[in-house]
Length: 293
Image 1 (cartoon, helix red, strand yellow):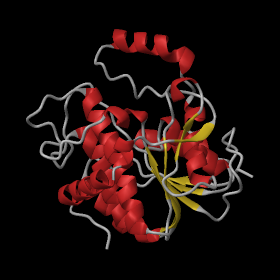
Image 2 (image 1 turned 180 degrees about the vertical axis):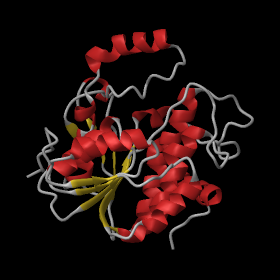
Image 3 (image 1 turned 30 degrees about the vertical axis):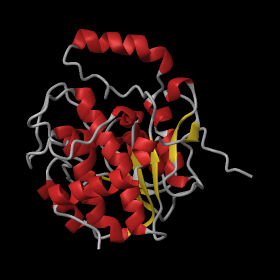
Image 4 (image 1 turned 135 degrees about the vertical axis):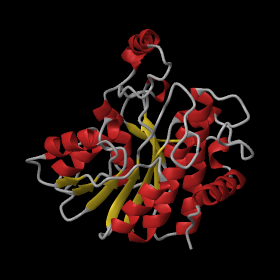
């Protein structure tokens, strides 16, 4: 009998288990972190914004589990290294959820294009640095935007070619899809890697046009088809605790795959290319200086 997917964020008992969740101070990451804490788990939620971190800790107060928010900025490799070196505990589930969008081209502290640096290169480095501490599962948050993505290995940071938010975001998410495959190849049977996407979750991450008026119009047009941040976190939770084979891709089952209950979805040829996966892995190693033995 196939396992029944989660329909709410009421997770099974997580007592005695530790989750490392990035991007947990807002949106779907925050909802997942609070659900894990409610189920008795310990959440390590590295954060850049101290105000948002304090809000998350306050929201988790009184729940069966706990939330800790050590400092880390995925857009700064030195910060990623400091956090990884400070980690003294094993991790049961690592959820690479942090993501960035921007209405204009920006760069990280290391000179990476911001979306590639935050959505792929920072998580790539973090995972390589802590992989030997992960005991059960690694989850990578994807997006169906990968289907229109193209990884330019010669100019991944848009230094010469024209930058726009959709192209940059789609490239970063295609990198995530391919990275997952290369990561699983290296981890083998030790730790399964799964992927998930939240559909069109009403978290504000789509508001990147640079025009408040246009952003409001987009929200108004898409709101009938979108879902809450809590529902958007369901595919991530399912990818983390569900009984699924490695490299399963979990997303909403409804209209346009924008909303609905979690289901396993097919990954297009572009997102499962073995050659592309190795190229993206080599890009990650080249840019971050981190690798798996």
